[in-house]
Image 1 (cartoon, rainbow, N blue to C red):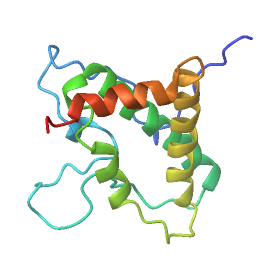
Image 2: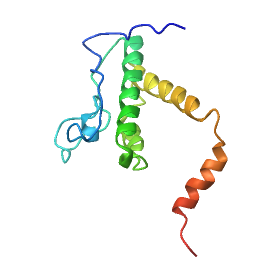
Image 3: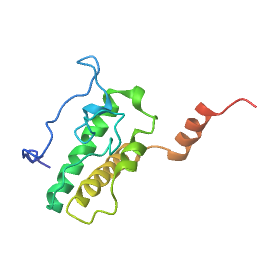
Image 4: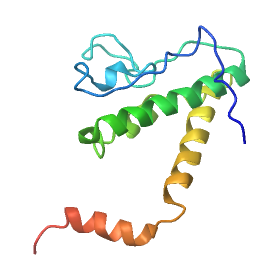
Length: 138
């Protein structure tokens, strides 16, 4: 299957690498994370622009998911700190505007990546190993 060129728009964030050795990198470098002072109230980890075009928002949301996963891939020390939980906490699931597409696209692409990464794994075996990593001695 031939891969089509990526969708381009001024609304799409530039694709990039999040490797720390290239520059100091934190989750604030992600295109959907607020750049405002982290001590100010408000949405921090899901700060997206209003949009009425659901389809475009779905595509942008998928692009955001790719940025998120690339960030984790390049910054393994930020895996298992519940960054995804912070992102989800800031999403507005009551918004019925086209902006709903942001999180639909985001989660749809994450599901695809999850499936691709685990389809040949023994998921429950991995879970037991993960739990053993954090199990306290009695």
